[in-house]
Image (cartoon, rainbow, N blue to C red; front, side, top):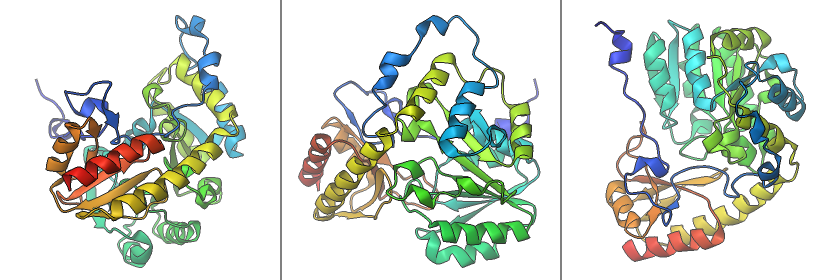
Length: 354
């Protein structure tokens, strides 16, 4: 049997989360997954209609698109839904074959995996401070290319201001390229208005990815969406697999968007707990924290990340070893922001193993 060469050479990306280790159990606190520290909106528990399970979901996700349209203040024709945000990364690369891609890294590994599968050429722009290096990135923009920027970035937590993103958008436009902006974490920042999602009709070269996994704690239900110009969305809707969102995910997404106070409560928790973790961990010898705009913190460590991860697992704490992020070495870890009690437990554990 013969298989496509690009598929045979494809290497799945390793992620964090409870299933990243074989020994995960209910006692382990998961600091490796960057989901909402409050979990999901409690009103979802009362709102799911399980009688719908025997019924095929709406393949157009019309009701969820309508709710997102109201939430974003954009037409339904600008929105498409994915089985998690990751599905949409691959779908976009599928409809833009032969493109030359540039990925700003270190960042989410699925951009590289998807572009290697579908794009003509993949290059990397490595920086830990994109704002200061923005002009250098602009110089490297290819013609008819695809540029990937995660904002705020995973795993650095850095947020590129809207004015800088518009500067990049303008530069990308002059090269007839497309700017892919992953805003999966932007709703969890203190400045969600730094988003460029409202510019998709002004900039035809803009593609914005969002994730309800992160913002509303719905990782297990897999709900992502993309916002772009009508033509691009129409093509994406053609290539997506039928019934890609299940009926319970549809319901949960709509209900989550109706909870007006949930994200405000989340941002308040992230603000206080990120300050606590940054202040506490920075005082521990062997750990240097990066400032963050969102719900996770990148930390440079004296000890190898692999060893730290093993030591913390013995204390029932799971962190993200960042050694497989392109642009980082074996001395970086990432931790998610959780509740004060859980964060105190992490700090105490780090103090003991430093």
